[in-house]
Figure 1: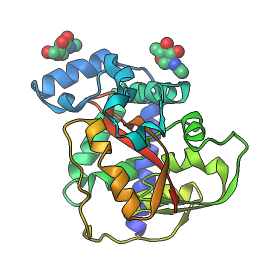
Figure 2: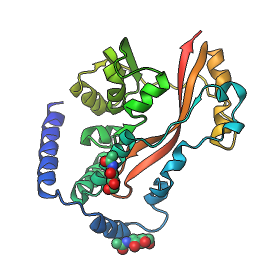
Figure 3: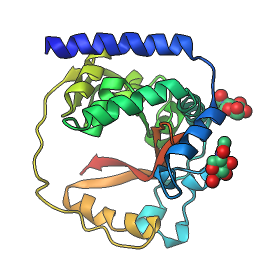
Figure 4: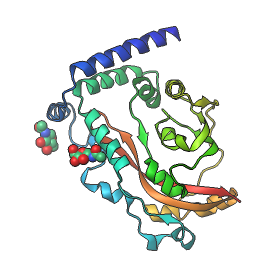
Amino acid sequence: MRLLAGWLCLSLASVWLARRMWTLRSPLTRSLYVNMTSGPGGPAAAAGGRKENHQWYVCNREKLCESLQAVFVQSYLDQGTQIFLNNSIEKSGWLFIQLYHSFVSSVFSLFMSRTSINGLLGRGSMFVFSPDQFQRLLKINPDWKTHRLLDLGAGDGEVTKIMSPHFEEIYATELSETMIWQLQKKKYRYIGGKWDKPSEILEIKGQNWEEQVNSLPEVFRKAGFVIEAFTRLPYLCEGDMYNDYYVLDDAVFVLKPV
Ligand SMILES: *[C@@H]1O[C@H](CO)[C@@H](O)[C@H](O)[C@H]1NC(C)=O
Ligand SMILES: *[C@@H]1O[C@H](CO)[C@@H](O)[C@H](O)[C@H]1NC(C)=O
């Protein structure tokens, strides 16, 4: 543990140094480097194109079942999301930081998960919603506050942070040791967790997003919840040397116990 702490200090110091030395953004150098080291169909294939980013929010409501149509909330690429994207694009452009991350990742991947490496390096933060989007979804105003928040599998706690102003006490669970370290830095209460094989598999059917979300009302009903609201959002992750950011398709539900 002490060794790890020592290594962390060293790594933080070198990141800090590297940042001081290379504050210059270098997308061109990065692009050249990436072209040199990866052929077509490399990691870039997983990237989210900058042009399509308004498509992330599109939902064909006619394809939704009636119960979902009634509670759908349309989200947009708002300023909070744009700030995350801009920061992510800028960070990806720090070539020498990215080279350093890439080097550390390749060494540590021999005995650590990708999530833990990201926790160690303080990178790969995720973004689900901006404060505005969260408030619209819950139909609350900026001053609304309640008692407790529990974030299951909170990662580095960046998503928790968006929700936290509305709660007095914040609890998080996480498996990765390095992510727990990131959560503790943010002063969130960590309540443990262990990895269990899932006891059931969700029956999600359909070829597109709308068809797939139609499978969920029945799942929630059986578990004793009603859907108050839901929206379509991109699940964004900070990028690396190869991509400005990564994006997954996300459906976010607000549920109420019956
Ligand atoms: C890198 O490769 C892409 C695709 O082959 C090309 O469009 C781009 O101009 C190249 N960039 C540089 C800086 O050579
Ligand atoms: C994001 O970056 C773009 C392009 O550099 C700029 O036009 C825009 O104002 C930035 N947006 C925010 C919210 O910082």
